[in-house]
Length: 185
Image: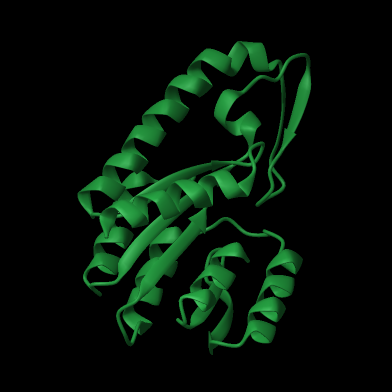
């Protein structure tokens, strides 16, 4: 929502595509404040239900881009980093500016959980009953390796990357990005 309104203030148009394993809903290009408000309302109604396929969706989106612009990817990026790299390379061929906001829950980043916990998958019905203390060290090691690979993929493709921790105000992430843009020119 914030990005949409910022884009409108710069007198540019906004479009959005919601996807999981495939594009689910595409909002047509608009420069209308009312239409962006409708888009934001629709975004709040979308709930994940299927495992994502970021590579296929971004490659499909890149193939349909008709003009250069700014492409903002908002995702947890919990996919194979090699697939992300392929998708970002395809997007960079469009000569659009690509920005990635990786949105993760604070608990995904820090894994502070304790006690006997049942994990339930958001994108499928998988369940795991365990003591997180038994997993913490290996989880954080794997998570940190994944994060390094994600950042490396973004760097290789000239993509601006921002990690958004859901426990922090969104304004922090946007302010960081806007400061980067101001420096970049």
